[in-house]
Image 1 (tube, rainbow, N blue to C red):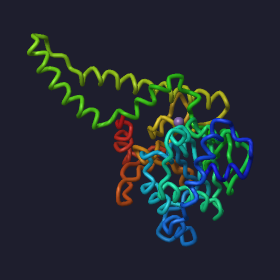
Image 2 (tube, rainbow, N blue to C red):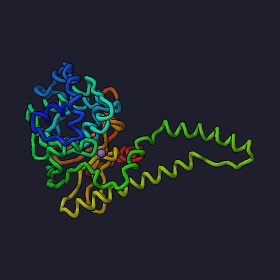
Image 3 (cartoon, rainbow, N blue to C red):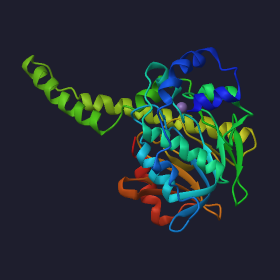
Image 4 (cartoon, helix red, strand yellow):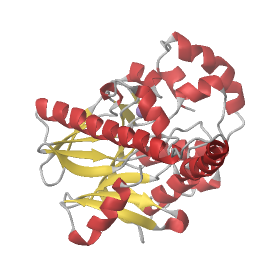
Length: 317
Ligand SMILES: [Mn+2]
């Protein structure tokens, strides 16, 4: 989809992407605009929440992990004056290895294009997995503007630097292995721990906790997150912004970091989160659950009633 659009726009695709594009296009031709994508309620905003701005990132369209149905559902329930796509929207890395483009992923792209057609200002800030789009900075396709980074001014007058954030991790492997840290892994390690230690006992060795060892590793991963936050916030401040909106580390957050407002809009692979700005300039993280349920929230300025939920978001890693 993006390949098609970009091919029409500019013939100067970089070599690595151009190679995969040629074989991708014919398979794409069977895809249609499904009723789900087209029967959008953009014209009838009743019963839906309208925001001043919505920020989403790390969709990883083109990978089995992308939760397309959840995002379609989220978009169905929320409209906005501006929609920021904060990087890793299409996963060019994975698509080059293996073509994966189901109808639901196509529906999301159609929905985003439709938003732009219907008067929503859609701004696309490419990330590292869709770095091919960085070649199109300064262009617009289907009404979607491509920029390297940008400034969003809230209704409260805060200047937020909008950037994906990949330039700030020196250790990309760390962010990658973070994605594998989850409950299933924890359960697995507990199981392995039992087997390992019954073996060690038979060998006359003392107890050694694999899960405790891994917990230490996770703690280092959490340190990576805070290092990332500090680095991004510091650069935002150096550039004269009041705050920053980024993605990349798949960890939604709103908090002050050294006097700068750090906002991360999370992802649609694991946590299904979006950052939204209300009409009055309040910022909020929406965590979109099953059956259209808003599970958790964090806001700025902080609201006492939702603060415990904010902590639960922070505890996810
Ligand atoms: Mn990224």
